[in-house]
Image (cartoon, rainbow, N blue to C red; front, side, top):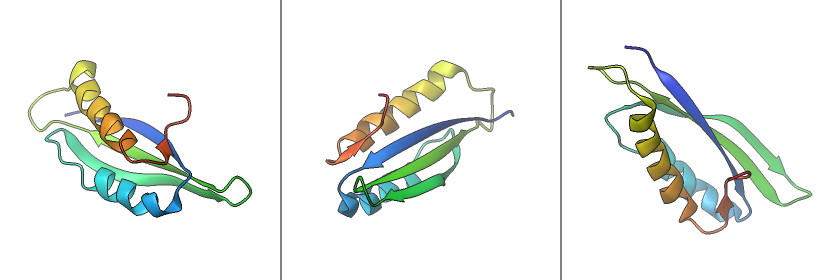
Length: 92
C-alpha cells in the first residue's frame, strides 16, 4: 500500500519540555502510523528556543488511506502535543 507523510515543526521555549514532546510523539500509537522520526533539530541560543521537526509516515496494511483518515490522527497528535506548556507550532 502507498504511504504518505506529514511534517510538524515545533518551537519549544521551555527546554525542559523537549523530552516530554519527543516521548509523546515518538511513542504515539496508531494503526496507520508506520514510522515517526525527527528530521530537523535546531537550538537557537539567541532566541532561547529549540526548533524541532517530526515526520509522520502513514500507511495501512489493508487499504489506501484517504486524507480524512490521516487528518483524524494528525489532528489528535497536534492537540495532544499543544497541551504541553511552552510548545507551539509556528503558523498554526
